[in-house]
Image (cartoon, rainbow, N blue to C red; front, side):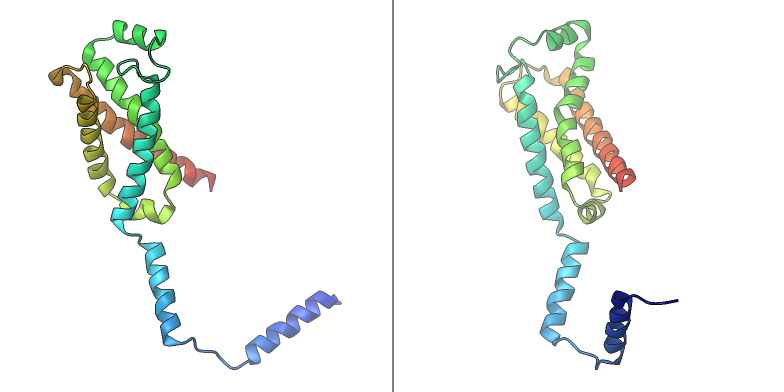
Length: 178
């Protein structure tokens, strides 16, 4: 079997590599590399929470543009949302609003975070999404939501479900795509 010139050159370079004296990197360089690998494999939790919060808040503000309750953007006279509100009981409507409001952000968060960040987040995602859902609810009340506190607490449940289910679905889709 005849070897091509490229194969012969590759074989010669490999033989030279094997015969070469081993090089030991400087200890300072070793330390820099180890720190970078550790940072890449286990990113700081506060950075992950901050990044996810930025994505969620931005997406939440975008979803408010279709919400007729606050008079922002395109949602002032949305027939579908008005019909949905009229056709459902307040708890069901608030559950759906919570789901819709946070699902976009949770989905984007699942796309934006790196696999190492998702692994580092781990089981803390439930704590994060619970806190985020509660703070979002309080933020909406602070903006002047016309919600009745008792019946609209179901919104938090919808937001929590929307966050967890959408985030998990996007992560699964990313795993299948790779």
